[in-house]
Length: 94
Image (cartoon, rainbow, N blue to C red; front, side):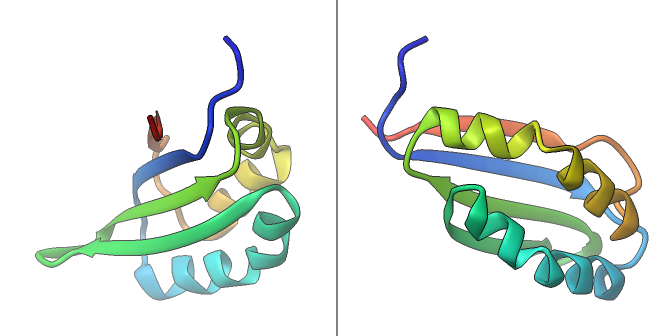
C-alpha cells in the first residue's frame, strides 16, 4: 500500500485503573513524539473510566505502523494497567 497523507489511529482499550494508566501514558510522551505522533487526545467513557479511547495523529501511514509495532509500546501498555488487547482503527484524511 502506498503511503497516505495524515493518518489518525484510534486505540480503544480497557485498563485496570485510569490513574495508573494515565501516569504511564503521560510518561510515554517522549517516545510518542520520537516515533511520529503529531497530535494526541484521550477520552474516557463517562460511565466507566476503565474504558479509554486514544486518538493519535501521524504525518503518514508508515509513521503510524512504525509506532504501533514498537515493542516498547506493548511493554508500556502492560505496565500502565491495560488489561486486554486494544482495538485499533487506522484512518487517513482524503
